[in-house]
Image 1 (tube, rainbow, N blue to C red):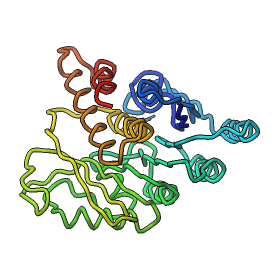
Image 2: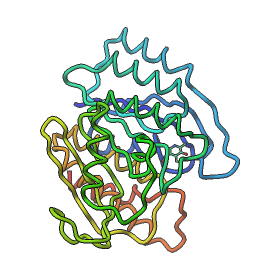
Image 3: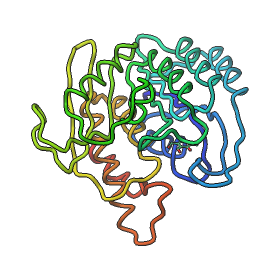
Image 4: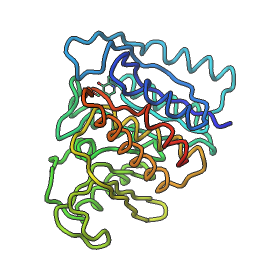
Length: 285
Ligand code: PXL
């Protein structure tokens, strides 16, 4: 059985980070070890959340695991709350990554042109440094822009702009980039007319290969979908899927989860009903 470790916070209510990664990756038949980096009463989109930092537990956990000689087939990092945690992740990768281990860094810190509460441009540059140690990074357009220190453009860009971003995102070390949340308002060479759709563009630096997947855009966006995407991607790769198969399934599962959420009239907006879509995920694996 494949075993991965994912390192992110526990937001007790809010369906994001570990409370989605653990059930999703487990449902995909992969042993899911975790390191909780903090415990919050909710994710940071609620007012008045509590926050207990667990940074000082991370190194002792890793030290114990080294003694036990645990091996991980993937190391997947998500939301990280401090510069110290970024440094600890670099050390964890150094200590546990071997030729068989895939490292996936989700530079979870921003969306819709804005950093999440508590993050700064300086943090985005430090996150870029962690990304340089990864085999695969999965930024959205906002995170990509902050890491590159360029203005976020919401619409009107073309395929050359996306390819340039992907090149720059691999220039600093990450081997493969999966860039999320791309929308073209005009037909583009290669992808054609994807007006009204939203998509993912990838670049594999070693093979010098671009690829993409576009799908219908749901009328509303929700918190936690980036974490769901990265979790499915990780689980699918562990099930032997190639990168495009993995992100296609991840995108489709996010869409299924949003549809399931919207089907309930009284749905909340703090997370999606991914639970209802788990049979779809397992069937399509
Ligand atoms: O889904 C990303 C995420 C993870 N963890 C915490 C968050 C957020 C997004 O806001 O606040 C604590």
